[in-house]
Every structure is written in structure tokens, then in C-alpha cells.
Image (cartoon, rainbow, N blue to C red; front, top):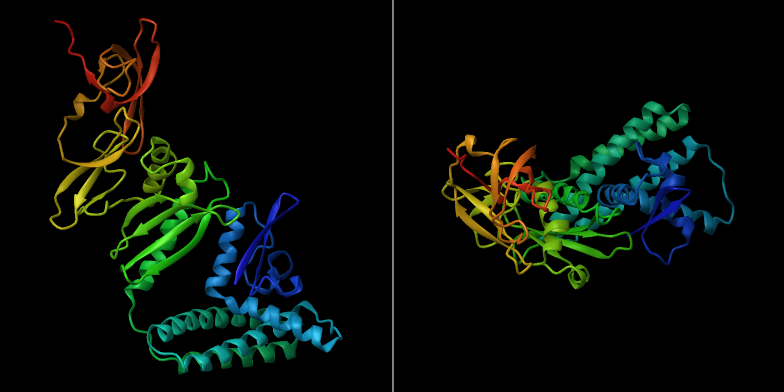
Length: 389
């Protein structure tokens, strides 16, 4: 299936179809067909919101799209359009879905192994959604005949559900749900740079026993590729080939625009080859120093993002250092800049005029005087100057 997002009059709408070669009338359009899906908005305020709703429709309830296509081509073949009331159209649409899902169920018997497991998982999700929607339609139906037909469909769907083999526990299913949710957080985090960023795709890599998701732009172009290990921990945030041409991975621009916002949004990062998991918000006192724990031993550590004068960056593991809370600069304190990456300020002293606390690091506004003026620095970039006795 394909997804197309269009902007009309300042709002976004989506179209979903089985093939781009189909007639446009065979597509499921949110602005036209929203009343066929309970709770589906007709238009959206942003590209990514429209894409998210369309993706859920494709992932959870593809029979909506298939039923719309089947009904369109049947009407075209009959060459005589039968006008239905909105209620009659909904009954016809659900009836089409029941037939489609029943055919899909019969086809599963010929499958084996993982193909059969995946098909059954999708069928269970489809049947659950169909049962819920048809059940709600029964309550809303005003015509007696419509209510009767819908009640028959509810019985048919329940009958199909009862024929399915018991579902075995699958930790990968819950894991994928987490990966999708984390990827949506990541897409939101890069929207300052790409306002229409959305989750393009999420897939399981069986040979590596890990998940990979891709954050995409409005034209389907890949922006950032995320990797999740077998424990569903984020362990990779990489630029796509297209992004890397303009913003290489080890550039400070990639760190500021992509890596750091994504890691903070997802809430953790576990570098490949390391047993440590960094957790933004567990504050060791700097924007680029993250509290961490070792998932094998439970010991505490610090994962620091090093940004030398060369303009690149990398992650370095440090031992947890205990610092007294009283050592934090306060307004009126005299401090010295110790950040070598800031040659204009390095070694200079100044007076703290303001303190700004963030979730897991703090900044101080330092007036360096002598023509340099005030500057905001992280507390890790300064040290206290002892008062003169």
C-alpha cells in the first residue's frame, strides 16, 4: 500500500491505496471517507499528523482501504451507481471488509512458519478492530435493517476470532510497540530542523535480532536512521546517506540538531559495544555529561560527549564523581572559564550574574568584563575562584 499526503487550504489530508496505478476514486481519502472509520479526523494541522493517522490505518486496519477499492471497481463494472444513505454506505463498507478478512483467513492455511505467524498476528489485530467498529455501528444504526445486518456481521467476526489458534506470548510484539513509540518521539525531536518529519518505517532485522526505524521527510526522503538492540534499547542514531552529505555523523551540527535531541526525547542511549545505558535527566551537572548505569553490574558511571577543538565528537565513559552541591556557582560568585574550546574566554575570570537550571544540567551567565561582556556557560565549563582573604 502507499500513502499520499496533500495540503488543501492550509490543512493536510491523506490518501491511501493498494496501487498508484488504480483510479483515484479507488483510494481511501480522509477528507471524503473519514466517516467510515470511528474517530478518524477528515483533515490535519500538520504533515506528520496526517502521516501518522494514515500509517495506523495501513498497519492496523488495511481492510478499510481494500474495501473502498473493491466497492469502487464493482460500481464501475455495474455501470449504474446506486445511491446509498451514509448509514447504508457504512453497512456496505463493513460488509465488504468482513468478506475480505474472511478470504484472508482462508488463505493463511497455506502459509507456514514465520509467514503464518505474521499473517495471524495481523489478522487478529484486524478482527479486533473490525469487531469494535461494527459493534459501535450497531449502537448508532437508526434503520432496523441496517442494525440487523450489522449484528450478523458482529457474529461473523466473533466466529472468525474463535477459529483462530491461541496467541502465544511474543515479547517482540511489545518491543515493536515500544520502538514505534520511541521513533515517534524522535521524529518530534527533529522537527525544529524538519517541521514535517515523521516515522517513515519500522522493521525487524532477524539476522541481527534488532529493530531499525527511519525518520523521513515529507517527500519520503530518509533523514535519520535509529537502531534498537535485542533489549529494545536505542543504540544508534545515524544520518541517512542524504543527510550525511550535508551533516556528517561526527560533526557538531549533527550532535546538536539530531543526536542529542533524539536521545533526550527517547530517554536513554546504550552505545554499541558498551554495557552502560545513559539516561538524560540523571544529572552529573553538564549538558554533555549523562548519568549512566551498567546493565550487567548495576554500577553507576558517566557517559560524556567529548567535543574537542577539532569540531568532532565522540562518547567517552567516565567513573562517577561525587561533587558537593555547595560547589555549584551561585549569583555573585567569581568563576574562571576552563573550556579550552572557547579560546576567547578560556582562563578568564568573571562574576556570575544569573543561574539557569535545566533538567540535567545548569548554566551560568558570567560577566567577564574587560571588553568580553556577559556569556552563558554550562557549569562544567567554569570553576570557582576562591575569595581573596
